[in-house]
Image (cartoon, rainbow, N blue to C red; front, side):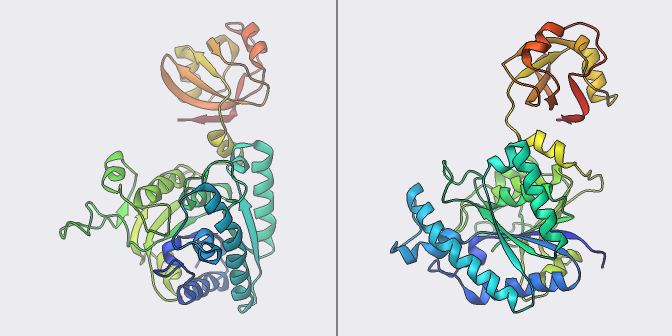
Length: 355
């Protein structure tokens, strides 16, 4: 099998028992499955939930805490339990694992995004298995990725993965709730995530997890936009990940033939917070969206906001959002250039992401 780069996301429900504690039978089955991927020569990154679930009982909670401070305290205890278990288990296969904790700003800040990419590249070059989670203990708002499903999608884009595998306790997406409708049909292959799909996937997840099927579809849609195929489902024994790669997984495959690889710089642009807006004429719209050209000052009609060179700004034609890019000038510079001829692009096509 051709060498691939694979991001595996394991949810809390796939790691814990009914009491919310680590289930070591499930845990070691996952380890064995990942080890088989490594033994086949694949690069593997693991996004693992379970820190809060693994830690809350050790703090004396009778159930998963609902307050921010309770979750962060449980994560602080549980994360160390989880990573120690992972490192010890992978050592049995002669493999090295590394802990990587990320926050939302690692994806929205340009230098941090590049640093994260460089770190992952070095770890993978040295055949290390990165074990990734959100840095819950220092997050200033509650679980800022929403859940680890979205984190896994962002990581898969960052490292230019060939496949994102989201393991859960539900074997894929159905056209209705299978627990309520015995006629519900599983969708084995889908090529896009529609609003209708998000609607019938709405519902609560496991009592020890934060994300249901809807969050997994949102993650799959994000990964697809980055050019990454996604599998959502379940599996048993240590061959399950190999079966998924071979197309025999017990779940739903989200993929299409026109996937494009999005470079690291453009990924950051699509994720960063926009600091201003430009409004352009029809000619500039055609140049950006149809002709693959850069944006020149002569095509700019108006500007909104205050920003610096290197900031990300949005571009509109009337009320239509065309995309966003990294500006080569400050807002004050652009105001003085509006409608004038200049060979220097305000937004270079290599720093432009079309929506």
